[in-house]
Amino acid sequence: MKSICIVSPQFLPHVGGVEQYVDNFSKELVRLGNKVTIITSEIPGEKEYEQKNGVEIIRMSSYSLMNGRFPFLKMGKKKREWTKKLKKKQFDVFLVNTRFYPLSLYGVRLAHKMGVRCILLDHGTSHLNTGNGITSKIGEWYEHGITLLDKMYCKEYAGVSGAVLEWIKHFHIKSDKILYNSIDVDEFNQKKKTITRSFRKEYNIPDNAIIIAFVGRLTKEKGIEELEKAVLRINETRKDVYMIAAGEGYLRESLETNAGDNIFFTGNLCKDDVIALLCESDIFCLPSVSEGFPTTVLEAAVCEDYIVSTYRGGTRELIKDKSYGLILPDNEWEALSRALEDILDKKDYRKQAARKTYEEVASKYTWKYTVKRFLEWL
Image 1 (cartoon, one colour):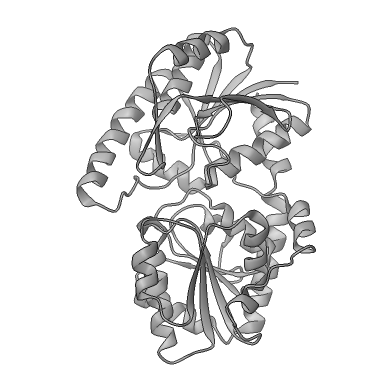
Image 2 (cartoon, rainbow, N blue to C red):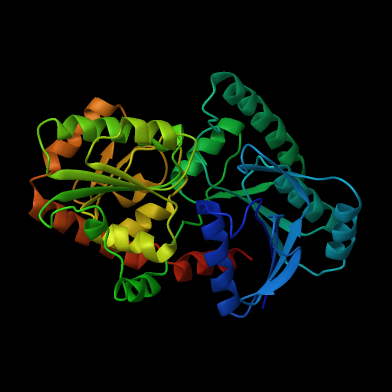
């Protein structure tokens, strides 16, 4: 049995890919008999300390910046008290998620002070995009600066995909360690059997119409604007193609303003409703410019959607060639529109590719496989 401290600057009930990764990773560690402590940022209304599903959760006092996207660790008495308590624990390893949050730096420094092995796990493949050129550039400078500090205390790095390892070379970090984002295929298949919600009925979409699904934050880096433009172009000649986008973000108002009759925005969905949406969809499209290895791609694969994505991130490690799906070199909307139009009427091909991708996920992208690999490092 190992005692593992996981640092995650954001965690449930905050919604995001890293949060889901940490939750599932922790559950599998506990299932195997290990002890897990999660250090994360405070969330209004959530307990500062609790034990949940066998996991100890500590929420450190933090400022909520950038509409909750960037928690900033507070200095002061609370931080000192928790640091003192944590130093009394006996951890075998720290697993720190992401490089660029103050809490990440706190985690690698704490591990260094305690003399405990530390692995910093990265999840992205580009700098943070705020939607504003000036603040995005400032963010790049900040990320380079805090990464230099991380490297002073942590010498061991990993990524959630090979694409992440390529990206962190940008910061002069070399690693061959991959802990793939994963999914509980059995749990997902069980949930598929209990679906009650129908988006086709809610939005009056005919049974023979094609639904293109998007699940993610409505932000520039996710490529949702390009996808909307692509679908609007398709709808100029085809009225049997619909787009349903699940998620929230600063672009939602403008996206809804531009949306045509065949484009719908659901807001954030619970896990069961995401499954319902993906099971009713024909194509899952995530034309993002920054990804580590998106959970939504794995979920779409288990729901046997045909997957269209971009070269950024680890999706290309799953969609290895056209027999699995489609990986575009970028998310330019006109090229995306042409690519989607090309596959709309190739139903048999899409089904065969989706089935092949499902089988790949079921064999290689499971939490049992990923956590086993992590424990082999210890």
